Length: 167
Image (cartoon, rainbow, N blue to C red; front, top):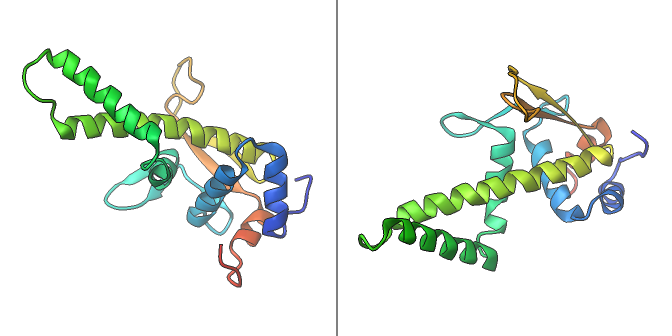
């Protein structure tokens, strides 16, 4: 790693230089460090609830409340409801549960893209290393069949896990 990241201020400065959305990238870094083991490695799955969840999906779910009050979410909901109503062609009202599930699915897809961009910024800043685990198959998407594993740099992990600070 090119820079020392022994404190939060240094991490934020590094992110400000490498990311268009440094606060979002910092939130992603903090969440990754929360589920990372003692070596700083998080993923490919996070044990939360009943079943293990891929880390990228878990990160998206954790960050989802940030966008739920957003006007874009309301517009997305309106668009999805209109599309479903058009497909039904006047066969009664659209099921709200179906609309909410479709909105959640689309928001999750957008969230995965945002998380991937934030992790790319963290990698560029030297705060995280990323690799993929799992089986591989021939696929145009080079991540096909594999899941991300993130490793937080030791200095950044130490700074984020200090107990004498409220983060």
